[in-house]
Length: 494
Image 1 (cartoon, rainbow, N blue to C red):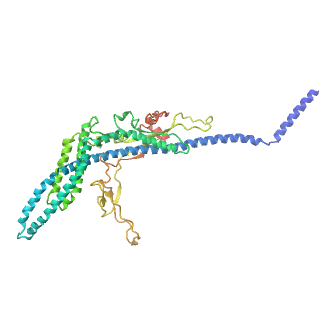
Image 2 (image 1 turned 60 degrees about the vertical axis):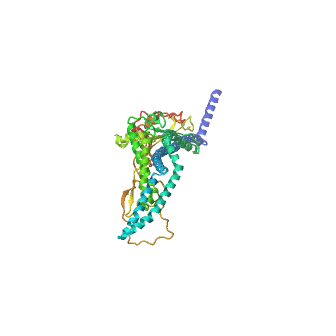
Image 3 (image 1 turned 120 degrees about the horizontal axis):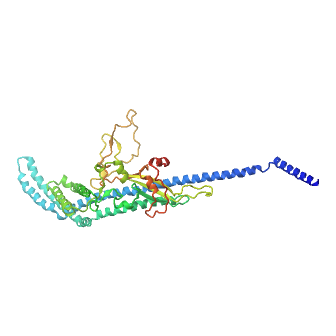
């Protein structure tokens, strides 16, 4: 009986304890808060990881845009450098011919006989019964001595200048310095592009609040890094060396280069002669010195072009002219479009045991650029506006620099008539072709670059290929080869 009572008491005590727990709810909210806090921590971790990924992606895309554009700027500048050196080559030929005539003084040697004949015929006009002829005789006597001085002064000046400058120009041509510079530039361009792309990407990473190691690579659309294995077969710069290259149609580029060199050289010789002989063309026509000088300098130039350097010192040419291209879009994508990719190691996750990034490859962002010559723009043309050739000073003859406009007046202009039309009549026209040429060749120095949508057909292959150039190695790239262009367009922000 006592055992039964003890069990009953134990059960009664347990029931009383259970009733007390149910009736006293102090501390139950703390237990729920623990679970709620754990859920909030997990949610916060998820948001922070997502925000970090988005932030890093935006920063990485900015780095890719900047790095790709920097590489494109190097590409455009080197194209303009080749165009400039083509002009320089023609100018050196022109100046060599110019100073050879200054050294030989052949024109001066023929002027004394011409001036003596004028002096011999002058007395025949004097005393004529016709006043104009009588005055002509005295005018000839007054005109001949100053022209002798003009010829002598110009010849001595040009001879002194030739002593200093002619050896320099002749050595430039003899050593083929300009073509050698162009060859060195085309060989160094891929490394310069990769260095600029990589350096801008790395500087972006070092400027972040938390530094990151970014590496950049510029790719060609044939899925080869700029400066890669295909550089020897088809160089990055879309140019042809008419002397050293061995293309199938090399002879065509050779004769095109000779024709272009002659056009440039004769143009610059004409400009130098027009500038330096202006006084003879206006007030010194009696001696015929300007005509003789032009004849002898043209002969010197012909000797340089056709006898001394017929197969060397030729300007570089653009690869594939417009008439040789069947599919323009494919040609532009192959030779004038490039893809820049910036790589970085995968971002470490916060709370990696809970949140794990399922992507096994490293992070990358990409951009695409296009090398091109901009077309002339439409502008307003007001009646009576001056041509671009007026109001210029300095520069190479024939290519003057525009003078600045008139200064702003200190006092405001008078108020306009309310009945007067605000804008005078104007028409629409293109910018001057001489100042804004749009030919895609290596005479035009207006090559530029810009970012374009990354839509090249080789993009998935480029992004899937590990970079192995310029010290950029060790990155794990995603396998995107199974994606087509539409799939990539759907998942890409481009």
